[in-house]
Length: 130
Image (cartoon, rainbow, N blue to C red; front, top):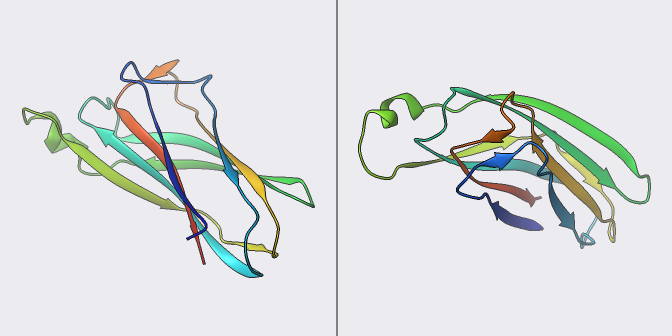
């Protein structure tokens, strides 16, 4: 695993202006790397779907690859009827990327929902491995 990290989202919600920045330090070998966006949500999330934008920029090319993702957060409807605290884990696989030894970059993640502050998303993470 090259990177597996999360940002915890404030209890007040994920602000549209909060772009999460994940730094990828230099990779150790030439390989095709699998990249996944990971979300943890709870019963306060008011929708079935979420729209997210993921921007990837890796040196030395510095080309930005942008993925706009619509993802259905399955299993939340029954959780709304329960009492107590419930969380769901989601993994969204992105297009794999070839990287060279020593290459590094950044991944930026933000939501594209209508609400300025999006409740119910607890954590947002990136998982990169080969």
